Picture 1 (spheres, rainbow, N blue to C red):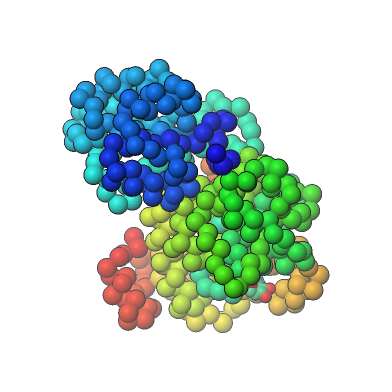
Picture 2: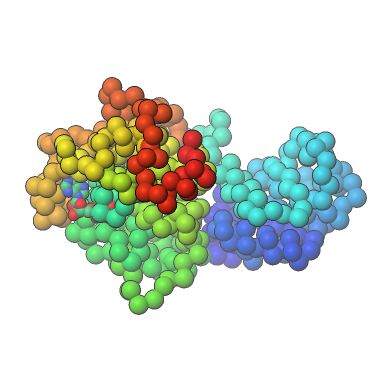
Length: 428
Ligand SMILES: Nc1ncnc2c1ncn2[C@@H]1O[C@H](COP(=O)(O)OP(=O)(O)O)[C@@H](O)[C@H]1O
Ligand SMILES: [Mg+2]
């Protein structure tokens, strides 16, 4: 078995399906949520009980009850073989809300009705996984519990997302004194290592090629050190071929980071939202870096709306970067109205500091310490740190800026084609 996610040293997952269609749906949902699809087998409740009696119970168990005549009674056989803390997702054909309630009351995590619809199963798996990873009341303090995970996404290329990701990494590590991992998910064109004047190495490419080998030891060898508290995983994958990345490596890396570090920062190319949406499932915040252009407004709208639907637990923090008075295509308040979200942080444009940072192989945060840009980056880092799991504090926002929601007809800003799309899928 590859060394994937093993909460409490257990196998992550096992699934039992009574028919081929369900088995197929389970395998693809497992793949989608970075759980091992080979753990999905044919069989009903009885096979599950027999298997678990020998193999021990996994963290997440999916069991198909369609062959049970008395699901509620029969499922109690699972209790004997399931260790506490296993999230059991039951599947069945009986559409009865009383049965559903009784199953939930008996400790079943979820009950899904067959035939399984679309993304329902993947969502249930992702949700069970998130529930198991969430801190429980009364648990001792540990690194995983206080882990801070954020992603930085640019509305457009060149807005400075990578600059902000490396800066946050440096600030968390050097000034907040958190053990920090920076994961650059742009495996072909990433600049995280470059930002620190380092070679990216092969670590990330090896991880993608064989997610099963990712563990603490692998990370120690594969990650590039950029300071006492900061490690980077980044790549310059050859342009000749696709890496055939199914996302399992990223999920596994995030899981290992939760154990080994106190903060994870993802430098996330926009396209990943489409290709690997599961990378956003365990984040406390997403920093959306933008500039004041029409194209950025359109994509900020779309990305914020996507986040609301797919990563509702991640708090969006909008950061205007390269801010220069009087230069935006769109005025600031019109922009805020159009995206229906306040600009939470404003990072001034400072060409001199940026050039200097590049020359010295430093992050913008390090090179800009005594400037307005440096102050703004530090305020952003504090806000992101304020979203840590155990903290619950609201992030610091730009003083005195209320959200201008509803004051402006934002659709008027958009090109015609987008107006139709926006009408079809309102943001609010
Ligand atoms: N606040 C800033 N002031 C001046 N230059 C900046 C600022 N932020 C980023 N840059 C510069 O913008 C360029 C693009 O930044 P980068 O982080 O690579 O963008 P992205 O990752 O969004 O494509 C870099 O040359 C960087 O130095
Ligand atoms: Mg970038």
